[in-house]
Image (cartoon, rainbow, N blue to C red; front, side, top):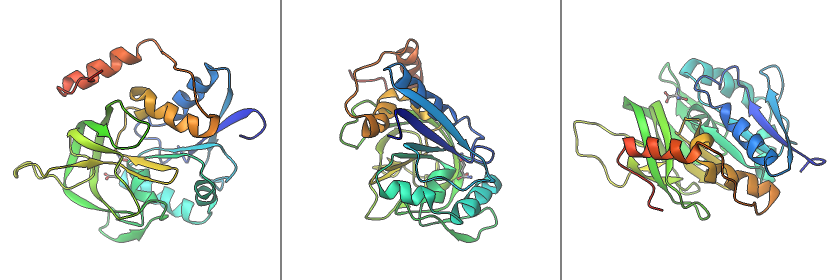
Amino acid sequence: MSESTLRIGVVYPAVLGTYGDGGNAIVLAERARRRGVAAEIVQIDLGSAVPSSLDIYTLGGGEDSAQAIAAARMRVSNGLAVAAERGAPVLAICAALQVLGTEYTDAAGRIVAGLGLLDVVTRPRGKRAIGELVSTPLVSGLTQRLTGFENHGGGTTLGSAAQPLGRVLYGAGNGAFDPNLPEPEPRYEGAVQGSVIGTYMHGPALARNPELADYLLSQVLGALEPLEVPGVAELRSERLAVCGAEDQN
Ligand code: GLN
């Protein structure tokens, strides 16, 4: 960690900030501060290259046109790739998951190269997935159900170097899902590769999933004391109950 302050990047919020995912950085900073760790949120504006020196990176979702701007901007500097290479945690939501993949189809139907930090490919899924998304985590160290809100037209297929973040209990997740056909099973959500986590969960994801927030923080800060934040348990119960997927513990 640089000096004694945890530095959390928000990459290009002007274009990857449509869905309130900037809240993920606020949750990370606040959960660090409540444990006595100084934390600073670094908003990276479109005119700047992504620095490679930050401790944690967050990237949010965006509309197709905004996503294209973010992708073009990120392609001209390799700061995020350098940071991921040294193991800095990166949390990429929805459009950012797609942009960090090897390629995706843009709004005009063209196949566009991504940054290649995740071995995933995204294509139009035919029908937009909108609604609650609940999954069982598949990553060691995560035990609580993951809850978020998905809103995407792209469907994402994982290559062999990436693992899914969760197995879907409710919602669409990564893949194609035609409501006129029987649901394909199993369905998966998100992608994990090294220190990079991509997910379709808005919410913001870390407000709904404090265990995931602490998972990211602990990669920089080491083992963390438990932290109860008033209202979070109620938020989780309410969101999970809507899907008939209440926490098991
Ligand atoms: N534009 C992308 C899609 O629709 C991502 C949307 C988002 O970030 N919510 O698939």
